[in-house]
Structure formats: C-alpha cells, structure tokens
Image 1 (cartoon, rainbow, N blue to C red):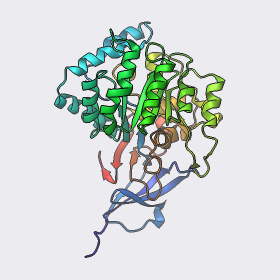
Image 2: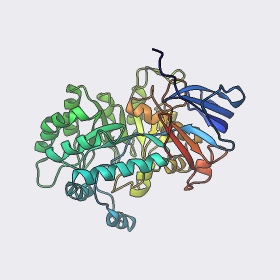
Image 3: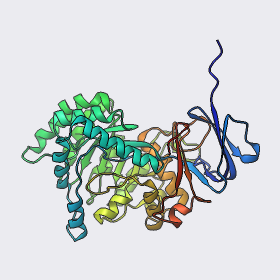
Image 4: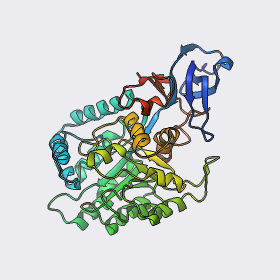
Length: 401
C-alpha cells in the first residue's frame, strides 16, 4: 500500500519574506511551499516548485506566526475600573488579582472554556500561531486544578501559576506549601511549566525558591515573574534554577544582566546550537498600562541576552493579545530595530517556551506557521502603528483567517 500523498500549498510572489532564520534572511519576490503541516521549501518565486494549490501574494509580506510566550487567558470578568483609577494616578499593586479570582470562580466549566477559546481565536486572527497561557486565577486546590484541566486543550503551552498571589486571610508560608505540594501535584500532569510571581506583595525569595525546587523535583521546566515593580531576586533565581525565562524585567541591575548573559555562555547565536540559557521576556503593553519604565530590551540584547516579546494578555494590566502592537512599541519606544523586535516576538518566544525547533522561524522542516501582512514590507508594523495589517494566518499549514 502506497503512502498518502502530501497536499502541497504554495504562497508565491511574496513582496517580502522575513524568515527569522539564524542569518536573518529576508527575501523579495519569494515563495514558501507547505506540505501538509510543514514547510517544505523556501526561495525565490521564479524557482518555486509546482504545488496542488497556489496563492499569489503580490504586494504582501510574510513573517513567521507570532509566538506569544506569556499570557493569562483563563479568567472571568474585567478590571476596567482599576485601569481607569490607575490612569488617574493610582499605582499598580499585585492585589488586584483577587478581583479576577472571585469572578473566575463563579464561571461554569463551559463558560470559562468558551471565554478562553474566544480569546485564543482573537489572538490567532492577529497572527499568533503559538500561545502560552497560565493558571493563576484559581488560587486554591480545586480551582487551580480545574483551570489546568480546561486550559490543556485550549492553548499550545500551559503554565501552572498557583504562586500568583497569596489569597487574603491565608498565611503566606502555608499557602506556599500548598502550591509546592498538593496543588502542584494535581496540576503537574496537565502543564508544561511552573511559574512564580517573585515580587513585593506576592512571593518572597525564599518562597519562590521553594516552588521552583518543587517543580524541579518533578522534572517540570520553570519560569519566573521577576523584577517588575522594583529590583529584586527574581532574575538571579531564574538563572540559578535554569528557568527557561524570566518575565517583566523592568528593573534590572548590572549584576542581573550579567547573570542572564552568563546563562548563554554555551549558546552559539550564529548557528543556534548549544545550551539554552534564560530568556528575558519583555512585556511592553503591560509596561504602558502600568506606567512602569519599559524593560531594557536594548541593553539586554547588547549584553548578548536573547529576549522575547509577549502580550501578557490579562484583565488587570495588559488586556490585549495584539502582538503587532507589542512589536511596534518595542521599535518605537524600546529602541529595538524592526528585525530585533520581530525575532523577539517569534524565535525569541519559541526559545522562551522550548519550542524553537518547531516554530518561530520560516525554515524547511518547521511547522508551517505563517503571518501574511497586507503591507509591502514588514516595516509597516511600526511605520503604521495600530493598523490592522493582518491579511491571513496559516497555522500548521491550514489557513485560519
């Protein structure tokens, strides 16, 4: 019996193809051949092979699909009043999470599933083909387990964030023991990562260490919310535990940047081989909403630290999943070049999730995740900020929008 013939689709006459490969290859009048869910060929349109289906994209740009490596989609309600108050001058504090926790607990499984699925579809329609999200609005054993069970089938990467906030009226150390013990035990089978909000008003250095150690004992990869509201131990703990990323990184000391750079000492960026270190994930939409200083992406890159850009979509501090906006902000306000920002939102996000061999760039053998822009060059992402430039999105070779 002969094997099944792969269905092939050719996107051709691409005005600009931004591959985000190790060489930073950008092609004009290019083409991409997809075979089922994989990229089979990349090159000049004039050299393109035959295909079962052909789409002509004259005047359009093609990028890898965005890889959003940090979001919080599993929630009910919103916190618009908190946002208005913050814009009027109130400072951000972690305690607002409790408002969302209450609203989320009141939702049925079906209601919560439908909300998360709708948010994931919204992000996909704007080019995000791989998306991480976290638990963290349950904050007790039954709810955190429920959110992990529901979330597993709704996103590409799922993170356990029982250590998001210590619920009111509960001893912080006792709650940390619950997170690192029964709660983690219940969620472990559903999740890819364990995260901790290491910050004033959330979890201390010692409490963070306990959760990270518990995750490591279960052979689960880790992440850290760190250095968002001020200097702190988050970055150094992430590096110490070999965490895949440390996220927010608004307030960094020279020693933090040096620690992050040191974690990449065995990585060769020219060949993208070697031991992966700790990615610094910048969340510019959140920084704008909380009026924090933008993360020092320029300084991190100059020090040799790979960065990711992510949406941090959540109801309190960054209610957007628009990665186009994050890329534009990184170029316009974080002093990143366009190519650096695009790489951070694609390959950088993939590095932060450990899926860089699968997604994050347009290369033969990788999953066919493509973001087609209705623009002649990718620079329009920052040149025309706020505009809806997404023409179509392909995820695993299938057109999604």
